[in-house]
Image (cartoon, rainbow, N blue to C red):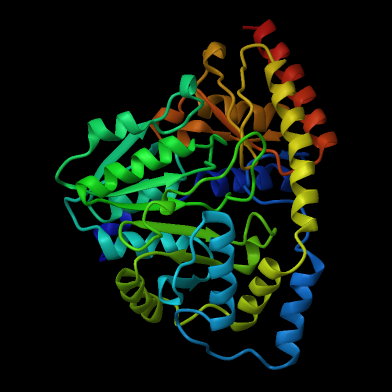
Length: 392
């Protein structure tokens, strides 16, 4: 197409939506597909959160609000950060967003110029690398290794950091591997960033979704006042993916600049959705606890099932709701295997290569589905692969 910005050739989509579309095409033809591709909790938004939004709408709280967010939600976030990260940020350090993704965009637009280097884990959430390319920055993808439980190693960051490095992106708990960095690893990374004058964007969207690990934030080093920017939101922990509600906590001067981006791009986050966010943080956490107990059972089921498939091996993730099995012994690429499982077994998962070059040889399963569905999927995969390799 003529007259389209060259930048549009440097930005890419997400494998999750590509494979969802493939699966839906199979279903339209009458096929039955078990879905493991989309990173979306299959639980309803808790009732008290929905009721807060209904109440706000019924009270006509539906107009524009401050671009940076309403004071009551900022106050709730201040208390949340104090309880979970150990420091209380100022209200001027907080920017409320329509989802967490704008926080990635705004942070990188505000900090990164062409030629600057951005370090981030590989494999990783695809938006990181996509924006690096869009901004003509230097791609500093750092491979994470299975033998290190897919945790980003500060020693590897230290080797890669240069005078051109502007930003380090961390994601713990991580998508797609479910890895969780240790406190020492996070603090060492934060100290490296401070020493070299580099910013950290700490994507903490799965901060409440942990199994066999504790949550730590690198922002504990500077209270998000100097170099560390926290990105968090409500989509995963409170099953609010469609509500689009997230937030940034960072240095006040930087947040003020990103608020200008907010004004230009989005005006503000929906007023009644922000009221729902207050209810999420200040109300009962019982639904979250129930959801995580269910996810733990599902994690155990999917890891056990994957490890019983010939040619597959899978570490138990310590956070989020993704399993990342190694399939290298099958001799198939991740895309070949993902396509085979979709079209022959009726199981839709994602190729690890959709998350970066180091994801090759792996698959990602989002186990946001029932234990019964997991068992059925594992059975289908075993059966289809037994048939394939018996004829190979």
